[in-house]
Image (cartoon, rainbow, N blue to C red; front, side, top):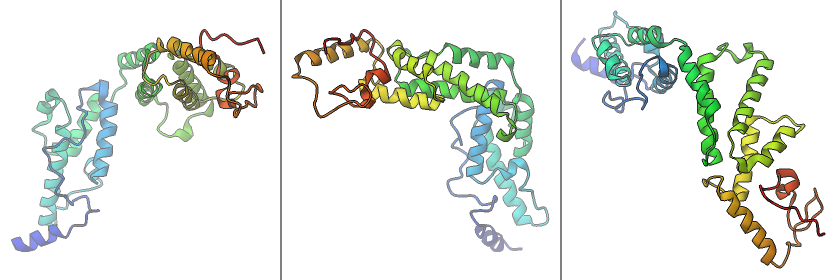
Amino acid sequence: MSTSDAVTLVSKLDFGDPLYLHASDITSTPLITIKLKGTENYKVWCTAMKLALQTKNKWGFIDKTCVKNDDDEVVSKQWERCNSVVLSWILNCVSEELYLGQIFSENAAVVWQKLKETYDKVDKSIIYNIHHQINSISQNGLSISEYYHKLNSLWKQFDALTTLSTSSEEIPKAYVDHSNMIKLMQFLMGLDEVYAPIRSNILTSENEVTVKTAFAIISREESHRGLGNRSSSGSTAFIAKFQNNRTFNKGPNPNFKCTKCGMIGHTVDRCFEIIGYPPGFKKRTDF
């Protein structure tokens, strides 16, 4: 086969073919920003790398579904080229120590398997550290969104290391419900004290409340109160402003009437009897 025929054959590869290489499939740019350090971050690294390789349609070089065709010289050389690209992507996303240990390897699937055998282990000290972070974390002035997503990231890492089954259908519903309940408690425990009343309402609610529902409820309350990224110390200023407005304003807005308490001046979604009274707020008794 002539050189021109070889070029023509490779150029006709469809973008859906694992052997197809796009102009952007360069080896100098890391596929992901995470570098494999060892057991402590293997799960996260492996998940991110697998997703990136699947996006590039190159996962076949890892699970060996894309095999080398030695009967076709042109296709065989293209396979070798793609394998080298995948191998470079892997090596670009590991620490320097791991890089030096694998640089002389020639097969991407072999390197992947070696890394898996070495670092895909459940290290109890890592589980302990993550669990300790989960139970020690608190809002401490963060916005509700920042606090929740920080906690959620730790939950996902913990679940990845301690999962009982790869299939959600095989996990008993009772275990899932128990796990969700624990996450709800952890989320509520770390909230700033400004949310103590609404936390109490969630805990005493007869309706089933998930951690996502609790996050949505408290996020709305944060928005109403205008706390944003301010710390819990800002609650005092909020209460003072609220009380001053009641003193100097002409009176409650007659256009709003609460269907819960029957009072004029607010709607049911702002009723303190539902969302809880702010810390230090004194309920009026002169009407």
